[in-house]
Each structure stands twice: as C-alpha cells, then as structure tokens.
Image: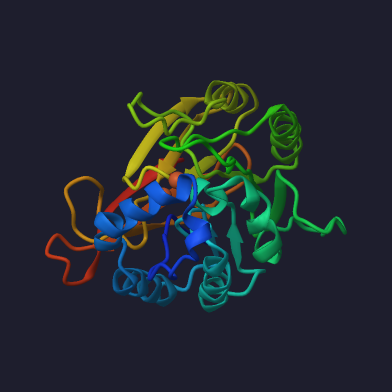
Length: 300
Ligand SMILES: [Fe+2]
Ligand SMILES: [Fe+2]
C-alpha cells in the first residue's frame, strides 16, 4: 500500500515586514487584508501541529498544492523554502504553486526558481526552471503537477492553465493511464468554483474538466478554497473525486474550515484500484488533531 499525504495553503506566518516600495499596487490591499483578517486565521502554531501529526503518520509521499506564502514579498520565499526542507526532502515532497505564490507580475516565475527541486519531474529535463505539467512516479502513483498560478489584478484570485498545459495534460493522462498508473493530478485551483463577487475561478476550468472526463484520472487534489470539499466527475472508467483540503494553518473560524490534511491509501492495479481517504485536522475545540472522516474514493 502506498500512502500519499496532501496539505495545502499553509500561508506561512509571520509575514515579513514589507519594504514600502513592495506595497505599491495590488500588495497594499493584500497587506491590509493580512493585518486585519488573515493573520488572525493562519497561525504558525496550528501549522506546526498539523505537520507534526502528518509526520507521525509516516506517509510515503507528501503533496503541497500551493499558497505557501501570502503576498509574494521578496522576504517570503526563503522561509518557505526552509519550511519545505523541514517538511521533507524534495524527493519526498511535491509542490505546485498557488496564486499567492505569484501574487504580482514581477514574481510570476519565482516559485520555480526558489522551490525548483520540489517541482521537478523525473527524470529531470535539464531545464533551468521546472516546467508544467511535470510527472513524478512514486510507488503505483503518477503525480501530475500543474500550475494555475498567474499574477492577477487586484480583487481577483483566478487561475489559468492555458492551452499548452492542457494539451500536455491530455497526452499524459492517456500515456500514464495506458501504463497502468494511479494518476493523481495536483492543482491549486479547484476545477469548478461557484460564482462570487471576488473572482477566484480557474478560468479554463471547463476545459480542464473536459480533459478529466474524456481522458480519465484516479484522483485530483487541490487547495485554494480553504474548505473541505469533494466533487465528482464522470470519466470513461469510473468517477474521479476532486478533493479540496482546508488551509493547513487555519484556526477555528466561521468563514473557512479549520486546518486539516488528507491521507490517501492507494492499492491495486489498473481497473481494480482502491483508494481510501482519511481526513485529519483540528478538533472542534481546537485542542488536538483528530481523525475527522474516512471514506473510500475508489474501489469497494
Ligand atoms: Fe490560499
Ligand atoms: Fe489560492
């Protein structure tokens, strides 16, 4: 049995003090939001407890689906790198970026530069920067890393895959499916988001869903919503679950689900996969980390 852990959106705190010039433009609103709201929700102490509990479960691999940081300040990337190194070695941890990791245009490529070895496919291509999609094979699983992280105007948190990634994704889903691997798609934005005044959608989500439905996958893992979510999509051979996990640093609050991570136990082979999910997170009183739910996503 292969056990994959998934956590997302740590939004690492504390936020370093920004240089005044860094607050020009979109970051100013984000900084005010951090100071007034988000710093009271995303707590380093909560994240530490989630990571300690996750490590105690000794998963075979860990997936992190973006929003490691908050405003893409120059001073946020190195602490995020150090946090990743405490989480695990690059061979044991796979990262895809989120919109807060590329918050402004000048930092659009920064996650690939700073966290490169956590985003490289195998075997490495020799490219200076990781490219998306990438594939890592771990046990029976093929982890397909996508990037939806693009800088956006103020008050938008949208994501974008683009035609090139979608075309490569379709080919990979076919190829890895033929090879009999358990295909896990890692993506920051959920495939579908309900309409909100604050646009948070994956803009080309429809094309992404069409690719999943037509070419199949065994599991889709995402973050971004800071909620415990499961959506199902029909594929040629089975239904695939797209599972969203709450922020790994979120304390008890009203708007979002409190911190959690998911463990996926994967066994079997093509046509006979079994995948069980266990969600572990903060208890209702915030005192400890408990098992919140257990469900079978694939197989009997
Ligand atoms: Fe987030
Ligand atoms: Fe996000």
